[in-house]
Image (cartoon, rainbow, N blue to C red):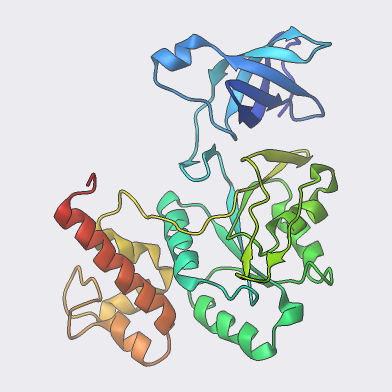
Length: 304
């Protein structure tokens, strides 16, 4: 962001720890700031990713106060971050095998927030062409951009740099799939600690300590999030879930009933498309499981 007056500037919160917010001025400096008490009284908590107006208390010590939080275009709960332009979700093709139910949950969350997603599958050096093609067949029809890379062999990484240019990108995915290695490549100064896979359980060691945006270059920020093993889809009506599976839309005109949810209905264009292989069986099965989960939540109460 551009500098304003010396004592009144705009910037972006890149980290928040114990009541201190670290604001990048969009050029080269980071200021340690406190948020004014007015935000507490308005029940507003600053988030990593917030664009803010702040005043400088001490230029040498790089300290300041956050005076205002500019309007957010979106925000996530896990990780707690705002103003995301896109999500780069990273899974491994193998070691560990991708949990596609978890991936589909993440895609639903992003569709709900209208945040564009790029799916990145790492460790192609350990996989065969058949495994790679299988993933293409699942997610190609859904319309998500797919990138297959190897951080170990540095294959496909240059393309990622052009993908994040000029945007705020959140990296997400389970532990041990290479998120920190990708961050280190795109922004070596981030010096993220990388960890290997535990051979015993084939699951990643948790290495990322907190959510933090890294300034890559002008207008470009990225965040490597803590590894996750589960993801819950909240505040979504069962009937709205189908809107989060973009590959369903072209086939809904063949459904017999308006408002078809593609589960119990006999004459259903989406179910026909699954049978014909036009929609991935894996995607449809995860949709069905999520639909039943949301129905159960609604039946027994979301707060219980």
